[in-house]
Length: 320
Image (tube, rainbow, N blue to C red; front, side, top):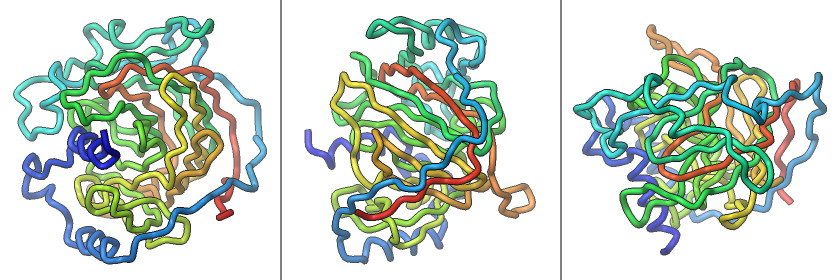
């Protein structure tokens, strides 16, 4: 399977099919023009990035996974048929929290140690109860053996969603509004805005190997305002730093206020700033805290060693 086909299939799964959008959800003119401007840039050369000035913890680290049960987590399931998730009128109700949660999220032993198991068949999320701000989150994940994608081109897909707020299922009946540290084969570390009122800014370059509008994170690149369900709704990771299927990967998420840094296996792959929500009066309000979600989105996934420690500053990304 070629790389472009994989990304196209994953994008379709993530709701890029414009026929599902209402008139109010069509791409905003400003983001469309910006996407076209990026696509008019010359192709960017690959960057080799490294992380410097890692912050020291300002307090003790704590485990978000106790290794025994899901007492600190809440499960939520979307529609029984994930294929209707991005439709304006899915014709069914979300499963929610009442039924069959234990069939989709559990604590099991893998590689001789306890881990969180996410089945991935029905889309939804496992949400931690803690409201977090100014932190360094570290976790390990690896793919399981099963995938539930409806098309051959779909990559294994999951996600670490942070600054989660609002009601369960508020986004497509399946997730809460948040910012996503994408976990997807070939795209781990991608930035995604989850929810129509979530905003973020980052810097990008033109990459013709991606689907339109060809946005890949680039240190010192063109700044874009990320808006869900527009051409700037997600920005690909600067580089694919994931290990082969079957191996454990380490993700580091650094968050201070309305800024964040995404790191995959020690490699910085994206920075994001000006995280915000659009208030009912239309004003942009900083998004600085929230819960985390571990997605269920089509692939069996294992998570372990989930820790968080307080910090007051972000590390920096520099070019080698």
